[in-house]
Length: 457
Image (cartoon, rainbow, N blue to C red):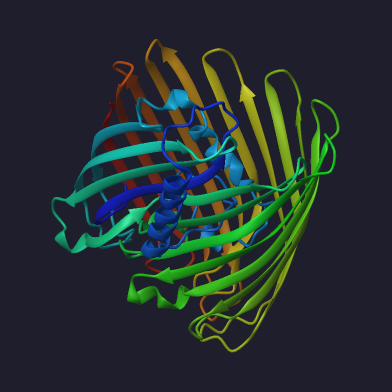
């Protein structure tokens, strides 16, 4: 949970491809078009900003992808809608509008809400929440889906931790797919989020309010050259805006272009090459404007029936202007690689191990580089009871600003879930995170314990 009094809104409005034979309702085409126009207008009116479309590394918390340099190939926006495409996910049908609803309550104890070395503040956070999701077909191949979750977090002890802005989760988005012939589709998308929790960025300390708006809008074209080869290319615009005046120096916009060529050699081997270039301009003069370019390749293949591997490697280089208030004049000349192993050990245990090296935009420097390793395991213990464990380690170094930080951060967590019934689930969660910094007053450790109950109507 984020460490402030807040609303949490999970909003996903998507225009997606649904290749299912859904029956049309008696609504007229005009009414359908009005619904689309109204939903798009609502999306623009909210003006909520989003993290970048792809998350570079897997973390115990949602990665703050606004700092991503675009080192990974752009994820297909259609992949984000797979969970919405099956009617089995919905419980009601109201005039052709398929709906699902749920509610939950979380109680969390956090012993260091501001990530402070000496001034540790503990709090108890009570969080009721509700959510609703829906799917409405527009044509034979296009449909409108949405998912909205609202929560309220009450901090029992530290009233100063309260915030009035909602949290919009990073999976909130609008997607519209246009089919141009049999082999070409064009996806227009707008992704948006509003985040607050400082734990998501390893460079942030001594605050419980790292509030920021993020938005990425763009267009991607997918061309099926043949049955085994696909080309992707597109443009995206990323906007970052702080909602805490202390972090106004992060406000910026990025224009980027990207391309990818992938080939499925057989039923087992998938390979590809990709490239991207982004132009970033900061609103204030604290950080340096820059141009970042990435060129890379990937391969994914099963090593056995129960073990698969994916490897990415890229060269990343960037030209940064000089004159920023933080005094960093170093250009970027680095590399990115990641290896992910996914293993189904047996009927009870499955786990994923990911490790590599990455470079990301800095907070008060041009950039920082980081080695990382992550492990996640799922244990299906007995009927209706499962256990999830996770562990991670990050070792990073900032570029050559006046004050640059080296850090080591690690953590581990466990979640015990009990499926009381088909619609009712209870969870017990624990997470520990520890950071060791080369700078004074930037070490911290944090414990989080939470109990969740969730009900799906």
